[in-house]
Image (tube, rainbow, N blue to C red):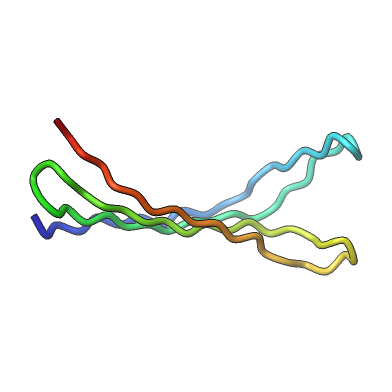
Length: 73
């Protein structure tokens, strides 16, 4: 109970486009943590991002996230 675990990860990501039939290298990363609520239950959260370009050619970062729970029985 109360134990916190965390991680961080980053590096290159190969992104293939079928419309242009090419592969680009982008940067991706994510960070997350989990908290043991009890012996059988933990909750977690993660945020991730990957570099990209918008329609105008400007550099952007696409973000995503998730939250959840894990129950062991």
